Length: 214
Picture: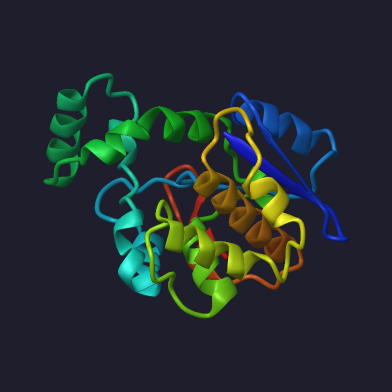
């Protein structure tokens, strides 16, 4: 995963880290004040999360980038067939291959999350952040030249050094993923200052908030 760390200037550092545990260690060690992650936190027992529904409505033409969070009962599935069967048995609906592809990352985040940790670690969706930052949904897909230019234009006023990082080689991470990480960092900083917007907010069965902040 790629991490953008910012301070009050704002200047930024961009690096690739192995897993969420390394980020949490820095958070709890005081090196970071708040963290945003582009992975679902708080999982429904059935049906869609309200925050996902609200996010799709908010970002309009980019709505397909919001994959419905898997229900908690499929977390331990090891094959796509098993995940689909569990999802249908528990909720009456299947599971997309895209959602299954993210299952290991969702499982890793869910394993380390607790309600107290959620005071400092929150869920962010980059397209929701870009919409909040620019005032309207992004018109172009992020992997196109037009999409990268659009997102860079949105980020430059708040991150003057973003171009330097966007064009650097960072452990094989794509430029679009780096720009997403900047958008996530922007939302995490807003959340820390309590200047953010919140979608959803209901509690799951573990007491975790099912919300997206921007």
